[in-house]
Image 1: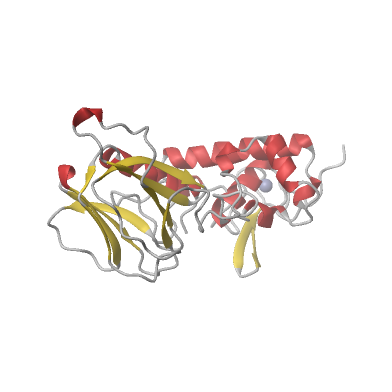
Image 2 (image 1 turned 180 degrees about the vertical axis):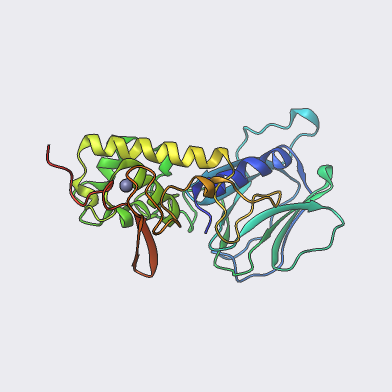
Length: 287
Ligand SMILES: [Zn+2]
């Protein structure tokens, strides 16, 4: 399942082909993937900034008031198109007249690029939504701030007095958004924190360490195009590269990169949790 680095990789790769370009049409090909009733798009439009909150990618569409190089991207969007990737959702580019791949659910025609930007999702756990603003979006309703906007004190404030274990708090989109099972395991290992610790038990020093690890791991993953575990591919079809750097995820029984003891895998709530018992002690060491 794509997490923040994979969605950010998609954002960066489609942005140059979208922003400031004419939109000839937006064609939905099925209705049951929309989070709210679909309203017809008003033309003419041009592509605006592409934003991201957590794992949700947000394409903005601007009214095309002006032609030529002066197309301003600072005007209010006509609407936003939000996409939540679910298990297998993805944005792809393909040439204008090439055949439509199976499981394509939405097509955006970009005539100047002679290109189609298409949303596909074989398993259909992903969701799309047209919204006037982020505030009015159903997909973003109640979700916490993007993980990359948080420093140590902000994390400590969000986790304040929570008895929820760290593994769960970090992946709860209503607390903070963008982190799933893979990066949760990598971040907690990097920070030397047990996934079973109550989130509210972090000292300010531990919360700063967690924030530092969160930024380092997510940014390193973005720099190599995210992680490819099952189906995720970058927008150009190539796999991400961060799975090569996983310290714990998928490494059950292999030696810990820090202490050499075998990495543990336990199943919690039907999900695999990877960690090192020695480097991530269940309670802070007594000093
Ligand atoms: Zn270890």
